[in-house]
Length: 143
Image (tube, rainbow, N blue to C red; front, side, top):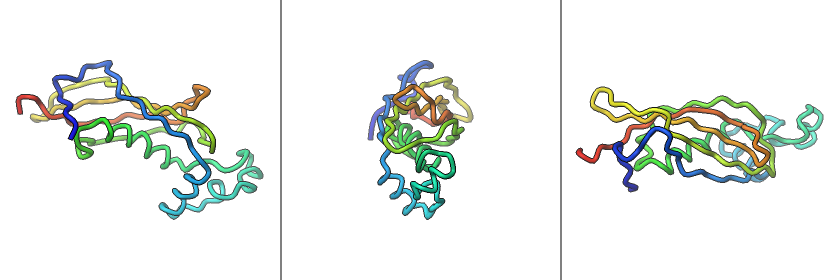
């Protein structure tokens, strides 16, 4: 277990970035895992006819990456209490994404130490695909 304590986290701190390259195979694997075979995700020709230029990734696949950013950073995945995202751009095979997070607020409520984080997923051209927020609880050094 990683040791990250509430007292060591400050507003403005950046969460270590996560890099991901989206592949067609990954999108198809996600379709298999989720059961979501919408043709815009699995049929290249359909994606082109729909004006998308080909297949696009599932929104929830991209959402999984911002969740991974948080759970990789936290001492325990169960510390993640809330996460939400807004999808602002399509994700295409071959794109490289940097998923970033930053501590926006920290506070104590009902004896628990909360940290609110801002999250983004951005492709190699600097275009955001996801913006979101997460709330986590961190342990205190004093117990």
